[in-house]
Image (cartoon, rainbow, N blue to C red):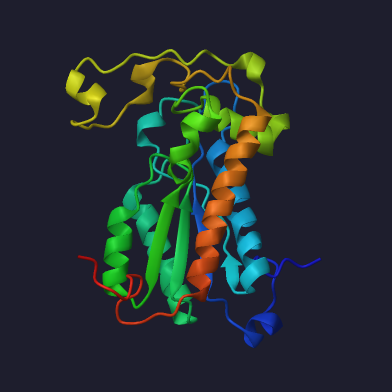
Length: 261
């Protein structure tokens, strides 16, 4: 069966009947995740989420198209670990800008970028591209979409290769998870309180944290937790896509008609 929401499967004849109103694509990374998760963790979970939400929204709107997930991301601070692949943010932005220019050329004015890697930052790109092109671009991070549910679903609110990521992996591709190989995620904290509190920021060099490129304990991860989180965020994102597909573009889009006092 052809998935009409997938640009790699749909054909020209079908597209000539109707161009979708919303395009969805993912951005991810190829990098080390402790010793128990695959190098493609970010790509695999992002691609699965992008495809799932596109299908869910297409079934309600028949007007969403899913593009292939970009596999590489910003990983300069993880390059001490084997076969981490790094591309500069400027390179990533340039590629995305040209993809979006192509979509705009074909009449697609609403784009959602789903990011599944913490090292990527698309805020400046979105700001610039909406000034340069007659399109509306939105983006989200798979870890932030369900941030308000983290404490409800997971025992620990953690970071790289910990309970959350490992739970998603167990739900999506358990055959690639080797929990018996995992380190406990112990790491060196910042020596400055301001950095620990977060009101001063810097970039973390992961090889300075520890020797295994994981700074969270994956031992509490379960497939059930991963499924619960994925179900929640996919429903939330697909609901947004459905709303976006049905919204009319006007002079104040995507703002509300009324000014709020």
